[in-house]
Amino acid sequence: MEKDGRSTGWLNKKGTAGVYMGQIKFSEKKDRANHLFADVNGSYCLFPAFYGVYDNYINEPLGDGRADFLWTDKFTGDTHVWINGGQMQTGGSSFYWAPKGKLYNGATGGRDTIFANIGGVGRADMIAVNPISGRATVHMNSCPGGGGGDDGPIIDPNLGQSQPEACDLEKRTGTWVNRQCTQREVTMPTSYLPKERWDALEAGAAWNDMMHRWKTCDRPSGNSTFSESASQFFHQTEDAQCSLVGRLGNNCIASKCEVHNTEFDAPESKTGAASYFVWNALVRVNQVRCRFGKTPLIDVDAVY
Image 1: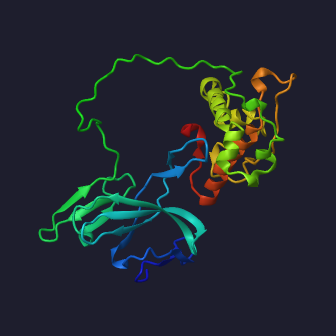
Image 2: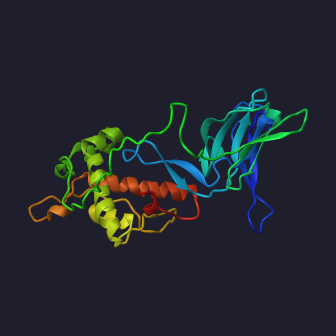
Image 3: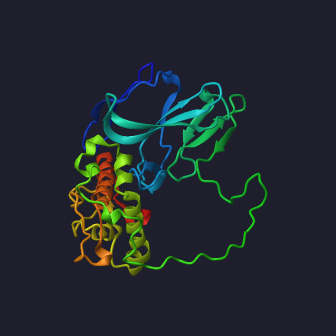
């Protein structure tokens, strides 16, 4: 690590003396004395879902075991984190680092703050050492339990049990099945922002209808995976295995626009132009995960 934090590195691969990766992290313009590496996210990471399906993040069990990049304020101990996203050329570095800002509130000066997996769950816990007595205080990196807060006890509003939604194979929300492949949002994709295309094709309604099919019909029956349910709903390749996120060669491939909404199409089979847009978004999630090289495979059925 150079004085400004720019780092080069070698990968410890079996059967080698170390594979030189060149620059692995560009400088954040901070003193290297206050930088360190530790596995902050451990067995979980925050992975942004594809546009239009969720606006938040999906917590996915990854078990990446990668060292993340940290900077600790030498006065307060507050620690900023860059999550190790794996090998990907970014800004001249051979690895991608996702900036997460301040994730640790300091308890002592930076030089007296260290990180180690004390809890045994694969995440870096913060250890504050008293520089005079040597006494150490551990701050566990884990989800708090018990609930509650400073606004009083949790009270049951007695709203009763919600009734599960019944399976309806013919359910179609809005008018997305009437959207055609001849629309400009399909034929001239570079002329529109992704959100404009998503909204014009009513892709959100298509996603919701597909998820209704999966959650109320196909998943309860146990006869198909999430990928199989989605591919059947959107008339895609029957043997696509997009549920196995992280595997190349799984026939999870992008498709061209098709519409199935004629008098000869069964009501439960009708789809519009949004089908290929939503399906291709799922394919892109699979491809991005492959590029990150995450292992083991993640079963999307468990996520949805």
